[in-house]
Amino acid sequence: MATMTPSFDQFLPEWVARQRWYTAKGSAPQLRRVGGLRYQDPDGEVGIDTWLLRDDSGPEPVLYQVPLTYRGAPVPGLEHALVAEAEHSELGRRWVYDACHDPVGARVLLDTIVEERAVDSDAGAAHGHATGHRAGGPGAMGAHTRGEQVRVLTGEQSNTSIILEGEDGPPVICKVFRVIGQGRNPDVVVQEALADAGSTRVPAPLGDLSCTWTGPSGEEQQGHLAFAQEFLPGVEDAWRVAVRAAVAGQRFAAGDLGAAVASVHRDLAAAFPVHEATAPVRTRLRSTWDDRTTAALLAVPDLEELREAVGAVYARAEAAPWPALQRIHGDLHLGQVIEAPGRGWLLLDFEGEPLRPVPERTAPDLALRDVAGMLRSLDYAAGAARRQHGADVAEEWVSAARADFLDGYARETGHDPREHAELLAALELDKALYEAVYEVRNRPDWLPIPLTAVRRLLGATT
Image 1 (tube, rainbow, N blue to C red):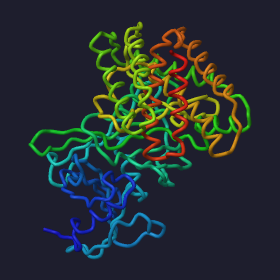
Image 2 (image 1 turned 90 degrees about the vertical axis):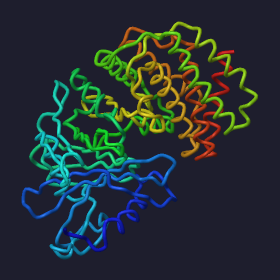
Image 3 (image 1 turned 60 degrees about the vertical axis):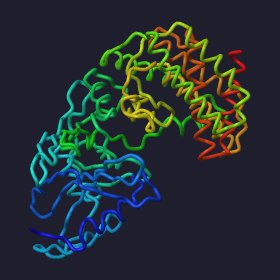
Image 4 (image 1 turned 45 degrees about the vertical axis):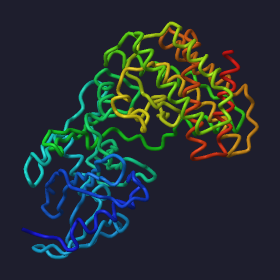
């Protein structure tokens, strides 16, 4: 049996620990291979495989995807992606690279998706079996590039996004999920369902790669490994547009943004089941609000005096009329929306709040939660203009942007979110308390933004 010196057990943990997507920062990875895939280079020159590695160093096991390529000579320009140099007992000196950065590995991954190939582990399908799936529906991507130029976006945390560009078709972005959750990835499921519905308010999906492997108790497990969709170069997200408008003292006309969010909500309600807001559902959601309040009061003791007022807002919301529950974005803010020339605002990243378990992120929820998230983000845009740029942003700027957003949403759906004022206020308050916990732990200088919002919301509802 062929061997590598140093072995994978010797060089992979140290490399994994240095990666941005490694979740247990400060801990030494305890890695165990639980599955994998073996791809074929059409030219037969580059070895390509994926390792599925379970890490037991943290409080909960985490499953990582590590795609690797093996070459017989170093590749100029890929020094940053070198994982290790090792001696193969049969092939000699090998240079091991992160396959996401290797043009051969990236193109083979894209081909696997669009050609709907099946890929197995070198130890058999029980240890890893993946199938590419080409997205369909009127909103799916048709022509695409094979990708003569390959580059990787920097700055991402839990995923690696590969941009493939060329003269032979429109560019593609392929998102490789580094942390693999059990079950179907919400981002993939939602965007492909919206494509089936013909939505033009999300980037057109191209396809995905899903995998099955054998779990620790012999059970079959499943998860998405990658997702490909159209890449829109040179676009700006709504956060940058809004902050720039706030700094300049110009009105941020958010009406079209509100209409875009409303359009996606309408398509999601058609693509996924809609549920009545029964008493048990209300009780469950109220419980999550109370839990968030408890966490916020522990993290920010200055909020303790507001405990009763917060509870009163939630009680009124629980007793008020509720709309039906449906699939939503779940983590909507200005940074999750881009402005595409000729197409308007497009929504991105339907994975939901990353710190919430997947079952919670995919459960039917109030569309008003997305609305509240966007209203809070508009407030943050004004706060960023003040703190980062020293701008004197009037409160009227935020009020006008909020009103424009809600007016646009109402025009698109025929239902004004302000008709559910008690519920919308409760969801905004819940989001502001979540923000307060985040800021006190990560950016204490920004804490006044959510604290001011909490007091404003309580003052407006009492």
